[in-house]
Image (cartoon, rainbow, N blue to C red; front, side):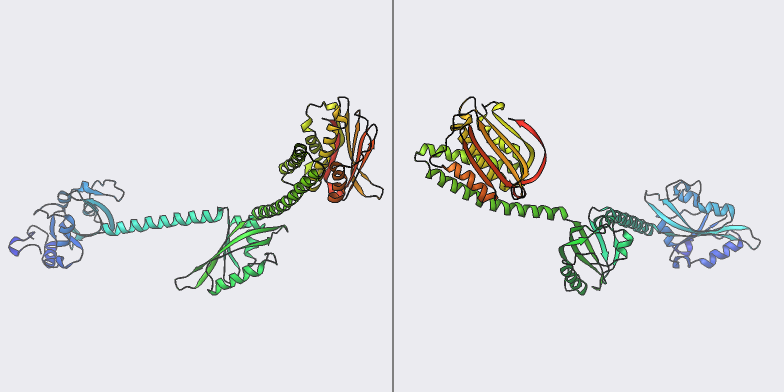
Length: 492
């Protein structure tokens, strides 16, 4: 007990005999109990209590003080903070009904608060009269805080799991979980979209079932090593045959998930469709190869142009003018091809570019008639240079050298005398100075006839008719045209 026998906490006088006997019997025993305990009479007067009760109360009750006055009932609240009109002890004393493990929030006199678990039993006389109550209570504040922390942790874990599940399912990349035997355990929606197979179809299949046969072995061997513990992470790019039969490229990153004992649980495989990237890489490679080829050809062409121009020109100024003109024609042909990614160029645009330096000439003087025709790169360069030579000759000596002269260009697909499909281009001049067969064939004539035959496998025939120069060009359609189209007449 807290005090000596001379300073008894309570007196057993004026209490019912049963209650007095209980108090005498419990004297010295309450302090041995591990939980806070106090005994009160039917009016709620605190008769006896132990040290643990004082520790929780934070102070000692006065002799003869009731529990209501001592604890101030207004300080008892529900766990959510709702005030209670009176304490549970008052309820028990009023109703005679016991209370078991009731949890309440208590505000102490010093301003602190705690949560207690209360169990209150009524005390009755042999006649059944209510003579008092025994109140046992435990401070469960720390436990409640721990429970709240655990609940918060559980909620956070659940939220994180839900976020991860949502991320897994709605990720833009394909994700699958694969058992060590190669069977699918889990797949997300993205991998279904990539492969074209439904979730049920994939879960019923095994790894490598639809991998392109030429690409299966490297991935299969790496997966075997991963399952055996010989390899941790690996990535591979391979072809995959979709359900619709289309072959796609995919990037696969494979990572093992192991237990604390290093036992393989499953493998996570992250999949991306890289078909567009592979196509772009292939186009880039083809473009680089084509560029290398074109650069070599262009340098050879420039070297040949320089040599041929120098061979037929003694005057440096004349050489410069002629050589620059031919380089400009070659450059414009390259511009045409660059616009179309070196895949093709339009014949009409090529011819219009040929006469661009002669912009002062009216549209009635250069008339073009023919179907819309798209040329292959090889034909573009050769025909551009040939047309340049013909246009330069016309401007210096032919139909474009006098005001009344004109040129007609007519092209069409037809069959030659051997039945071969060819692109026929006719160049016809009229209204210019009288034409005579030259005593010496210059570089232009040789280039037109020679380049068409050597580069395109066709033919070019020059006819120096008195009324105007004519040139008939025939190029195999398979070599020249990328695709023909509907045509018409047009002048520039």
